[in-house]
Image (tube, rainbow, N blue to C red; front, top):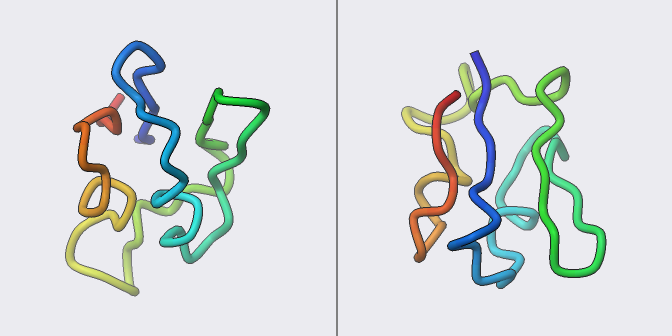
Length: 63
């Protein structure tokens, strides 16, 4: 499984990029995306995916 970012509610704050231990999140302009092949859902590092934890707008969701 993977996570994605809802562009309609993403505030483009960049917090998710800074927190991702696998560098799976990238930005092009104000659009953020999660590379599913790099995303390990923070398994083995944290109890919950860090992008979900830090997203103030709730834009990160499980696909």
